Image 1 (cartoon, rainbow, N blue to C red):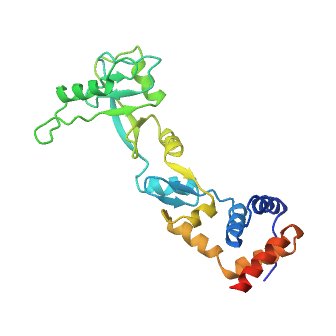
Image 2 (cartoon, rainbow, N blue to C red):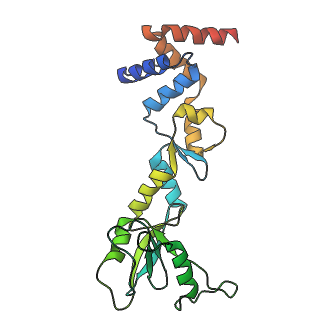
Image 3 (cartoon, one colour):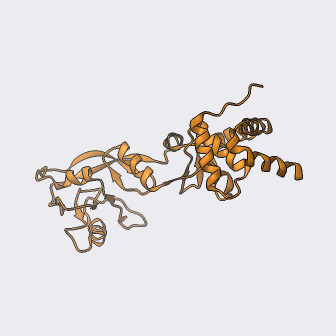
Length: 245
């Protein structure tokens, strides 16, 4: 088997890693090496408590499972909209396009509840009662559509995207994904991934980790470090710990 060669930039990162810890463990150091070698950036999808290999993998899988966004339609109505250039959050009636802004009404959420409960265009019934269903958006592009001085004589329909996680509306899929990145994932190191027991590791990521964590791979890593003077004290201690077991 060919000798493992650790690139100089990874050697430098490894040196900083072991020097930062009082007693760096072999497996933790090896996992740090694997993270650097493969440029891993694991992320935790907080809601489902699943760890993915990286953000692109998380987005790809969650999109395939319809867990990120859904297309929906909103109405932009001719009724007076309580929206202006300072509005940062709006509550939208799905039946008429009536809107209440967070800076133009003292209680916009109460107002939208009251509106949809009496809205003539709301013909839906659950148990004989009108459902108090409405949309919420903090997307500047969606808000801008309601702040326009132009008022159609009849409501017009616009396709937007709702977050499958928060239900909030966005003007594009890309905006939903940016919201997902900002609020629903947490970055983890590979060491943190393997030290925790609270989260599920996505199966293909788990298979990758298991493929790396073989005795032969770890032995090759230790052998390579043993050739580098900066790591001699750590290698000697690791070997001593193994012999003592």
